Image (tube, rainbow, N blue to C red; front, side):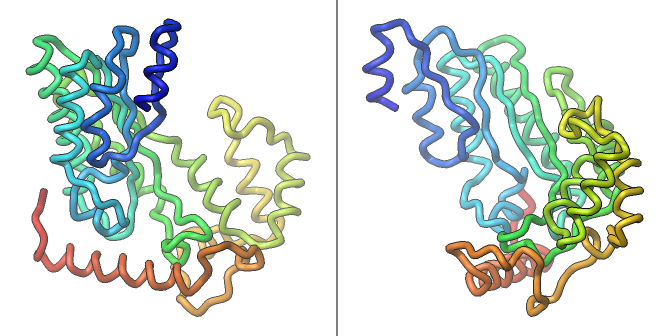
Length: 272
């Protein structure tokens, strides 16, 4: 980044960065991007509490995040965008509340540093247990769970400078079926297309009913695919695709995450 700044700054070119992992490097961002053109910083903490991040293998802390944001505000950033996931295995109300608490803490730091209101946007996506990840054996949370979590987030927000954006629930459920299903999906996708499904990644065009009908007609049990956990020794449809980190590695990581979850729930970790 230092080399890029040295190369482009004399040419009047502004350098920005995409979503950053929240680690010790974040504390250098403000110094490296010391230009007067930027207005925002995008970070992906994924979870709002240290204990949950340890469970998903993210070795970062809220202290890292808050200190990094403080440095960014000191260097002129006026807007911070954060990406979180809702519905992670073992998630508790404290994890959901933590999204608001963390976002508002950042907003307060920004106001303290700059003497004016800064904008903090918390983008909250619905967790989909993806193939070829340690959570591929886990179930996804239900519609009702995500609706309740969304309502809780909106209800707890106190600062107007903090904005909450939640991903469309039906789109996340559709994503889960499409990435976790078997060969019958081909028939279902064609059926949905013939019924008029187009440009479904755009919320204005998404028609979930067409897809649920297509899955039903194709004999696909959405509940079994999306909302039921799978045993570690179950054969999985996507395992026909070879990846560098295979089943043994993913299984070890799954067991580590399960052990961390048990530790979290035992009350042996801080509530931060």
